Image (cartoon, rainbow, N blue to C red; front, side, top):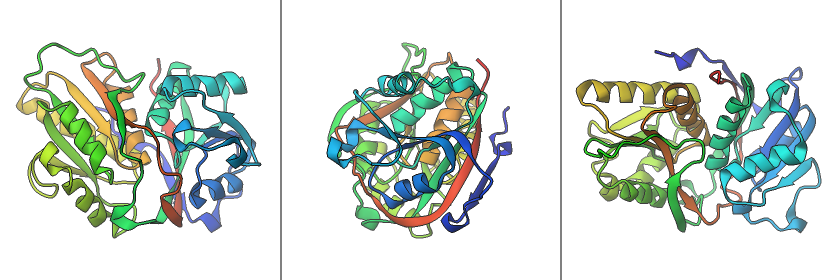
Length: 319
């Protein structure tokens, strides 16, 4: 069994950004948060690119004046990422690439991961800046919560079986309780498992997360703090998240076979990365998929200040 925890990660304060780090391309998804814009300015790369997602609803006049902007022409994650590489004419296989996932849409991030793996990329760097605090604590709105679709993410569609008697849905439960409720209702007959972020990004964020997750308790079932179906993984570690999911699934299968497994990462972008790594290493060709409740729009600015910056070196399975 793969030990994801051996993968490399480190962290630093924003003021102590390492001076010897540089990449061929630094890619970030633009939004109005200081922790997105300041990291973009600090990063050292030959080329720096902004990906402009339609979900943030920026006008042309609001786009950044620094860096090269690639404007998404679609909401569909596969088209967004393929359009980026077509417009930039980048060949990712031999590229020293760094992706700041802080402002990324989760489906875009996951398809990017699959796209790089399918194009022979063995590894690349990811950075993520932790917020000093969320703008409105547990009341922070990350999306407009208007769900337009609940579906599988491109590149993460499983070979599912018709027997649904022992289906399982694992939800990375973040602050968006409406999203949690929708995906739980979408897989109403599946056994539900929650993963909460612990340790959290900041000390007070765990309690905020629990308060929001409790709002979806009726749809998910059970209490967010009690019961066999609640598990924990660090909010800032994709490798431990992937390892935790692997262990949860292994223990469940030891007790009873799983007919279809569904994963839904709705917490931090870092945990989303962990869900994607687990899928790519262990779930290709199996009755496993990643499902997501797609929203019409997302908040442009949800946090204040930067706590610290994480760097993860992502190694991808050979294809």
